[in-house]
View 1 (cartoon, rainbow, N blue to C red):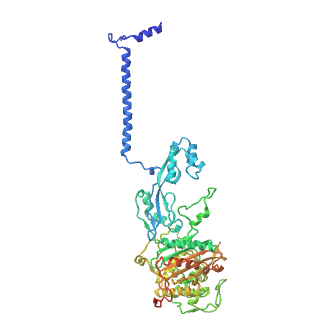
View 2 (spheres, helix red, strand yellow; view 1 turned 135 degrees about the vertical axis):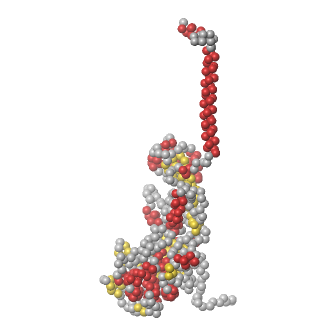
View 3 (tube, rainbow, N blue to C red; view 1 turned 90 degrees about the vertical axis):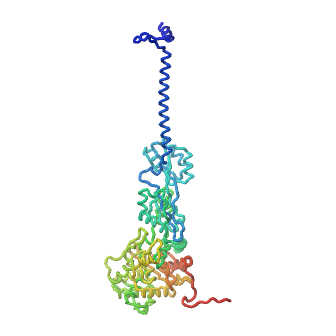
Length: 582
């Protein structure tokens, strides 16, 4: 009965409205009206929603794109200027790269992401990557500086929460050739060593922090280095280290008038494109990182008999001796419990050229004694051998000397024991002996003769410099310098063989050898200094500087002199030469 009544009610075309009395409204008409109202509301809602979406799309379309560099606070995509050699050859430049990052909060399946990334990214650390993806943090680096192919392969994987950020990668086309001069940067393009670090100290780091280097094309930085000469110097040093079974070797070439460093190499070295290496077990290769150590400017050594150059120059400059003077070297000197002997003594009085030629410790000590302790210390200070050298190269070592100079200190320092200085400082001081007596600060940037003259300081008389050129020339012809002589290029110089200091004691069977040379001796233009650390053998089986460091100088000058514009001259440089047509 109830069902029957309800069916009749649904078929009725009117209802009774008690409050309106006679007004009747059909049920179906009321439903149609409600449907139209609901449809209008839905259309309105959809219109508003699509309007908002459209407005946002228009906003995104007309606004500047958001740079991915904004991801990760405090990190800018920094450009660095190219570094070029004195001839415009490229030493360092930037390449555009991308780095892979993740937004762990958006990662759905960390295991899947790690598994897929491992197929593209070599040597991916699964456990570390998985830990980062499960961290629920906003940002995590996964791998820096990917190749374009790796980026394309990862994009093809379609992984949510994975993105890329544009970065710069520093590239060194010459590899290890000038690694200690140019230096290297870290993964954030910040200079860590060499001239790269110098550039940051000159304001580049501040520009980067201010965000002014992102897209700015900076002017190239030109160095004084000649890449052709640098390559030869490094090759010779590397070959000598192997041939003479030494711990290390190196060399430097300086323009005596401008102080420009044309080449500086120290081996073992490293590739700045890969400043660190990892072993098979994932640990850092500490042996490889030893190549960071630059023995030419970042280390001090007792330079041995090369210091006799400065002792004799001191005696000449103070007027205590001249080239005709004779000193007694007939017997050893006993002082303070020590006995000072000559390596191959002549056991007779020696002229000053003979003291230099035979490298007499006794004769050199006698000259130092004539000048006195205070004068000796002041002279070496004036030549810059006892204080830290000022140049662009960061990390320059500070020389060491006795706290209090006594007579025994002055005597041993006269022939290169008791004071440790850098090989670069030794070369700079030797340049002052050759260029007329002016100490010119060394530089790794181009410098004109006029600029050098403004910075130069006179440290010895012009006459003293002329006498030292005579002594270098004499030794190059008659003394140990014969082993460095290059036919046609008139080389002079002085060897230095020092017992190496190990754990505070001199090792009798381990040497640190050096040779300081100048050429051409009729008017020196360049000073070349070579070092070789702990050689086990040398030319003809010898271990002294004449058998190791001097042949290095010969090999260097023979190859670089023509590149530096030095014309070979054969025969007597002072004689008139005529061309004869046969």
